[in-house]
Image (cartoon, rainbow, N blue to C red; front, side, top):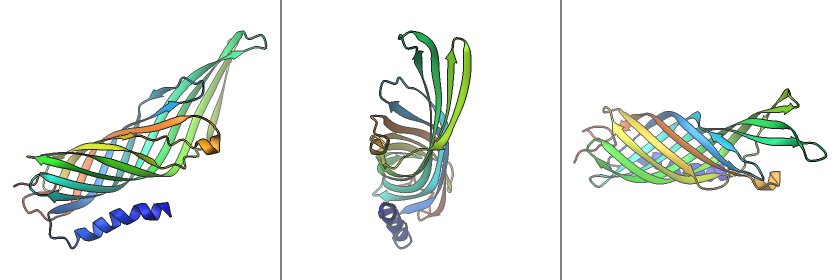
Length: 234
C-alpha cells in the first residue's frame, strides 16, 4: 500500500507531461559514484568506509518562468556500506587474551522519489530538494576474525538485513548541458532519519545513508526547440 501511494505522484507528473504546453523534458538518468552508511551503536566504535555505488531511473523536469525549474524523479538506488570494528577478548579474570575484528558490508536497495526546485544560468542548473525512499532489499556480508594467543580464525556471515523503514533526507545537485539530448548530472543525498529497525532487533543502533553520484541524463522528449532541459534560453 505504501509503495502504491509513493508511485501515484510521479505517475501523475509523467502523465501530465504528455498534455502540458509548458516547457519540460523527461527521460532516463544513469549514475555511478560513492556511498557510505554512518553507524552508531551500543558500545561499538565503528570505522565506516566509502564504497562504490550507483542509481538509475526516470526524471521529469519543468521550466518555471525564465530561469527556474521543478524536477521529480523515480529511480532505484544501490547504497553500499563498509565498516569494521574491534573488540578485545578477555578471560574469566578480565585479562586481555585476544582480539576480535569484524569487517562488514551492507548492500541496500531503495526505490527513491526526489522532488526539487532550482535555477538555471547559461548551461548549468543547480537545485535542492527532498528525497523519500522505500526499502526494497537489504543484505549483509560480514567477516569476523578472532585472534587468541597468536592463533587466528575467520568466520563469514551472509544473510538478509531487516531494513523495513523508509529513508528520507536532503537532495542537491548540478546539471550541465552537454548537447540537445545529453546532460551531465552530479547529485548528493544525505539521509536524515535512522533506517535501522530497532523494534525487530531490540537495539539502539543508528544507520544513516549518504550517496554522491555523477552520471548522464538522456532526454526522450523535450518541448524546448532551443535545446534540452535544463539550460533553457530566454
